[in-house]
Length: 104
Image 1: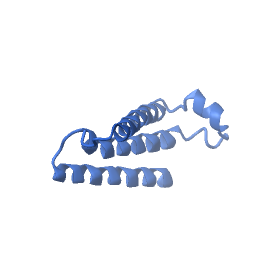
Image 2: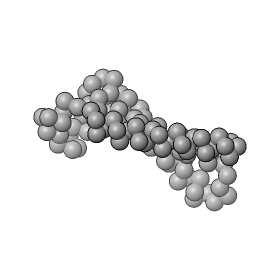
Image 3: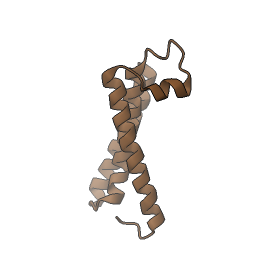
Image 4: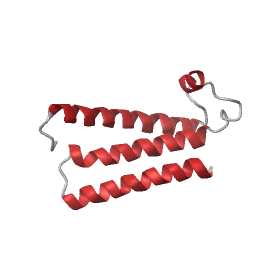
């Protein structure tokens, strides 16, 4: 943990937990090919949107993975080159998620 401020450390840990939840929920939706009931009730999905759980789940999982990889260099001591490479991978995953959502 490179930040001396406990507020930033807590914020980064919250981002890590939320991104792990996003990865788990996204993979679950994509693999089971069903939306979780909370998503269906909370967003009032139309009939055409209910048939797209792989697209939405894959996008959520990719964005969650991107956030998780982006926060790794701040929580784990790594050399600068590794941190820069992880940031590049996070950006690549984010662009893949955007492309995944647009193309499918």
